[in-house]
Image (cartoon, rainbow, N blue to C red):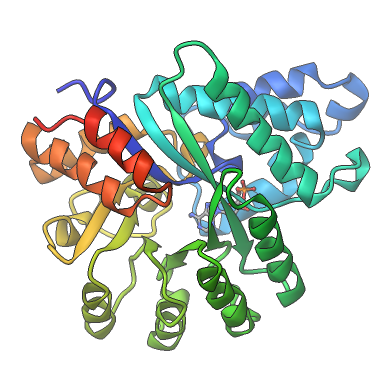
Length: 339
Ligand SMILES: CNc1ncnc2c1ncn2[C@@H]1O[C@H](COP(=O)(O)O)[C@@H](O)[C@H]1O
């Protein structure tokens, strides 16, 4: 089966983690030598073929490297446009990209301008000839954020709702728990205002306690990301949220050592036939883990024995849990393969 031609939906992709190493390298090469000289070449910092970043080495990649490189409007535009191009070339027809609003004071970039610039790139890309990809944006609250910063994310969602932002996410290092409970009013308010909610859920053992997961389920999320360390009680509660979307990221989880037993041991095997939930294959950070969405489909075909019809059904089922509205769902129903 041609997994690239298969029209696909990508619902869990972090913008900064989706930038290819080649693009990072191009951006690095184009910087004036005075500013790039302090940073090593991305192809040295993140050698091609290296995908075994674990949760300890993964998060610092952004704070100590990628954010230092993507530090002005030209690099933000260059990286965003190339991420969109890469998803389209891989046969993705609908993308929900997520990003943590980031102010870059050295370049006079506010969080508002950061979001506006990304939405501008999406509009520009979609206006291009032969564009087959439609993209919406989700804004992320990082677990390291303060309540005030989380409220700022909600305010940005409000300002850009109807202009491309469709939802709010909770992401970041799962080992950080300090402010989680204080975010409750932010996520509840987001839902009240018609924003959709997706949450990184039970990504690591530390973030898989029943206490944390009950708290997160209490925010009423429409979708959950990763869904790894769940006790039987929480699994039952997830099933009871009928129709909840599960964004499963096989390569990320396997390469980062977040699951045991390799691809065969991935919990995709446990969830994909469960009727009450909608499993959506996703890449998480294709720039880091190196597996485009087409390859994620190839992996489940290989390791879990899905045939052509099952692959098409799996890809189509994702339509039900997109945040992009009824009109977009209709478009997808027309173009996604049934067999
Ligand atoms: C293992 N999977 C993951 N789990 C949790 N958070 C993740 C993540 N992958 C990425 N991020 C979050 O996304 C940010 C980078 O993209 P943006 O700058 O927002 O576009 C990272 O700093 C991290 O907070």
